[in-house]
Image 1 (cartoon, rainbow, N blue to C red):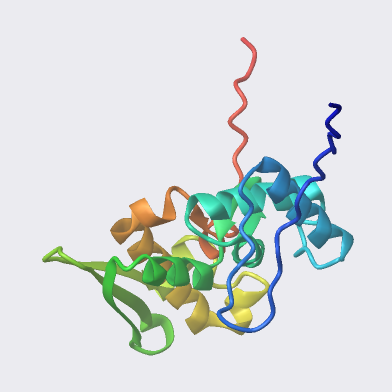
Image 2: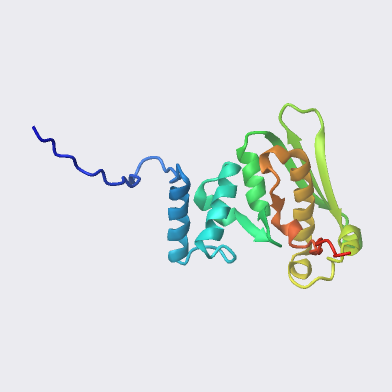
Length: 197
């Protein structure tokens, strides 16, 4: 008796309409590559992630910290050659981890005396983690007169820097080494290439 052997065709993930919304999360390297390629071919990749290779790296970094592929593409950015996460993505990631008890953000003072303060409380820990960034700090870092957001949205930039400090100090395990984009983009690049003798 001759048995007929049929070649098994690769199964594509099932897409269902209605009901609970669930992300399509790749189960292997090939699945992540296919999502990255589709996003790039569709022209929907964010600036700087416009090749399948770059989009794939963003997806993989995002997955390492618990993000779905599409959330990673919206929140992960490459700044100065380093993967980072945008400030709102960072706060979303930390809140979503279930490790944050609360966060409080405010700006005190006026004019050159403004100070942004971000306080976070981690569940199960007694101490509050506090990040601050002042106009004085911004001036010392050469940011206060800088073209772009530092002239247009000064309070927001102060707040984002204070938030970055508090989140990195309080939730390094959640962020897993990802820099905060708003902070990294203001950091000057240094050439650390060893010089020949």
